[in-house]
Every structure is written in C-alpha cells, then in structure tokens.
Image 1 (cartoon, rainbow, N blue to C red):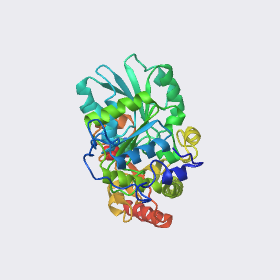
Image 2 (spheres, rainbow, N blue to C red):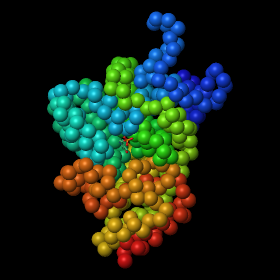
Image 3 (cartoon, rainbow, N blue to C red):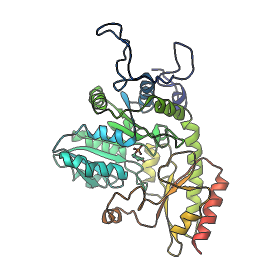
Length: 385
Ligand SMILES: *Cc1c(COP(=O)(O)O)cnc(C)c1O
C-alpha cells in the first residue's frame, strides 16, 4: 500500500495501479468467470470469479485504503452491501437504526431480516444520552447515517463509537452522503462502513454498486465469507466504472459542496421557504459535530416551502433539476421523500420522524451555480401561482 500525503492522490493512485503485464495505466476489465489452474491446488491466486476477480479486487483495495480500513468488499448494490453486513447477525440479535435511515435499510430489516428473528429499533442516534438507555442486552449493532436521509440529521460518530465499544456493540456507518473524501467513520471509531457507491463514488448516475469496509481482520474474514457464500458481488465492468468515477471524487465533491453552500444560503434567505435542512449552515442541527467529524456539510439539502406555495407545481416547473430518485451524480436531482425514497416507511412513522409531505430533497450537482439558482427561482415563482 503506497502512502500518499493526501487523499486526492490515493483517489487516483491507490489500490492496484494499472497493469504490470502491459503497462496500461488503468486496471483491465477481467471479464472472466474462472481461472486456469496449473495443477491440483496450484493457481495464481484466482480460482472462481465470485470468490475473487482482479478488477473487483483493485476496487476493494482502493476503498479500503480510502476509508483507512483493513479490507474492502464490492457488491452489486448498496442494498446488497447492507444485506451482507446484516448477515453478520443471528436470531435474537437486535440492530438499532437511526431514525432517518435510508428507506431501503429499514425495509430489508422490517420485511426480510425480521422473518429470521433479527430485530431492529428506530432510535434518535443524535441524542447520545437517551440512546445509552436503549441498549438492551440483545443489541448487537448500531447502524447510522450522518448526515442522515432526508433531514440531514447529524450524529456524533465518535460518541456512538465510544458507547458501542463500552457495550461490545458494532458501529456501522452508512457513509454514502459524505464519501471518504469528506468523512472517514473508521477513524472516528466505527467498525464497519457501508456505501451505496451508486451515488457520489460512482458519481455519474450510470451504475448501481455497494461497498463495505471493515476495521479488523476478524470482520474481514467474516464479511469475505458472507460475500462469497451469498454471492451479491459487483461485476468486473462495473468495478472498472467505479474505479474510474472515484478518480475524480475530490474535484467533484469540492464543486458539489460549493454549489450546495450557495443553494442553502439562497433558500435560507427566500421568503417562500419555511425551513432548510443542511448541516453546512451555521445554526443547523449538529453543525458543530459535523464540522468536527467531517470536512464540510456535503451537498444534500432538504427544505420545505411555505403554505401557499404548491410543491407539485414546484416539481413540474423545474427545467434543469430533474425529478428523480437517487443522488450524488454530476447532475442536480430533486425528489419528494414522502412518496419516493421514503414511501416504504408507513405514514405515521414518517410523520413521527419529521418527514412531512411538504419536504423537498435536493442533490446538488456540479452545474453552473447561476443556472441552478435561476431554475430554483423560476420554479418557486411558478409554485405560487
Ligand atoms: C441509495 C442508498 C442506499 C441503497 O443503495 P443502492 O445502491 O440503491 O442499493 C443505501 N443507503 C443510502 C444512504 C442511500 O442513499
């Protein structure tokens, strides 16, 4: 493992660099399902491509270096990655999930893992004191996002990590919204990091992928076993695309965040806007904690329009910003959490955790800030009519 001063270099040169057989500067796409063996038990380290593929391996080494972990694992989606991590648990175990966790994470626990006797509870992980009181004997892990989807609630990762360690519980952080460029949970005391690499790591809205990084040899062994046994691996071509996307992560994120800061300020000062949720704004929930544990507030913003403004009109009036699920691509997207990303959470539960029907979520892309502000301004104007 090369040791670069800054993550900007590791993004480009980390993991496995190029191809030593030809000098190609990019890792080739090893589009093969199997590898010829010289004799019984004699092979070059590769046997069958579910177990290991050199292109996927290059990506797995890269993400492990970026998150400062012991080992990385690439899956066919963020949900496959989360499913593999949840497969560490057994009947009778309980997983605490942060209240604003990704809808799919809630769904897989509620509709799949519950059938196998793995329990979950929703807790406010941003409130360390009350969380400590919720740690019954059966709790084996705390799974959190910070900032969490879609209210951008910040959780003190180091604080959770400390409580978890004292109680022999695993801390799992879904770092999708921040990426290792902005925040490295393992350095803050987490045990496992998961990613929907579909989002910022891929960065171009052209692939579905998931990544896991663990902080110990023991977890590496268990996760490696689960990955091979259950088989939700990332294909060689998608592994290549993801390595390609990761190379430009630093420059993309800098621009994403610069634009998001400007959009958040604009919305905060707009008379049509009731509330802005963005951890990069001074005074926002968890602003100080986020500044301490991350580089900045990221590029996801949620907000609510005031009463006379019609959100359906707002959505249909946007021209540059596309109405779509997902986030983290170079293009700006907008979504309606109540009917889109968080529709799998029952209505009463949504209300309870503060996801109102008026909530709008923006994934700020890297377009011209002038064009973005112009699009928002004209759509807010239309929504008043
Ligand atoms: C999208 C997303 C997921 C799920 O990832 P997929 O790649 O869509 O399977 C998990 N967590 C967060 C925070 C996400 O945004």
